[in-house]
Image 1 (tube, helix red, strand yellow):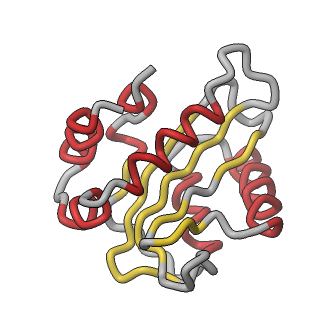
Image 2: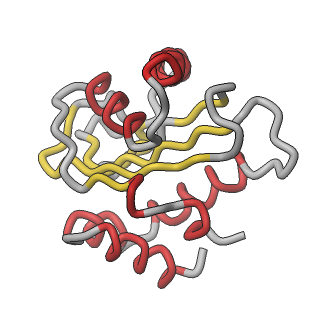
Length: 150
């Protein structure tokens, strides 16, 4: 299993417009192209997860994630807000890079936690945050993931 298999160009936004955590979550959800009701349900699930503790892991990175019936397979999205927003991250620094993971509650392939782990591993590599801030197109994001071989 490679991370690249889960990302598609239409689920990548390199210019998020939101200025709050809620705005960013809504923009990431839109990248999954769900109907309006499903978007609302997923937003509630992600908010519930954030209320347990921020998914801001530090170094400008957040990995909002949840299980929800609105998807029938694991889905991921990536968004970037170069100026950063207050995300209540563990290092109290603004978050700029957002990896969202959503999976159904019961998942035969059981990829949710492995994908979450691989994204965390990828994001924590020394050069990755800066390189993610420098990319100019979704294709460059996908190439970076391939290059890291995760």
